[in-house]
Length: 196
Image (tube, rainbow, N blue to C red):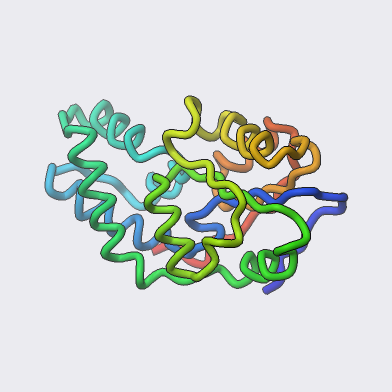
């Protein structure tokens, strides 16, 4: 399915990664479940999708607070990352987004703006054979305020040398759409292929 784009003379495309370029949300959720089950932590699927786009460490901290647990942030995030890397080969690209990447590659610059680690983003794009198409990667650790704050998108625009108003964002998560809007950027909502 071809995703319709808003009208405008866009000079850069900014893409979220998980759930936008790569249909990796099911793999992310399975990795979360396995890592959190080891600590007796509950993470309902609805909450997982509601929190899409939040950095991993923020999610662990929030679950600790919510469930009065004391999971070590670095241990749980590293375990979740390792489990995700094992599951990643089963992820596929999202056709409507890949079409726009193929169509516009070489004409305008691209950036990935993600709440995931640089390792996860690199592995995801590499698995699809498209890592070399992205001029900039802005990942967890590259900014201080995650989505829905506009900082990650504004950083990507700055690194590309493109004014925010000339960027088009591709996003699947509410937090990402909020961040794009706050950054003064037009956005395309990417429908999630499935949940569950």
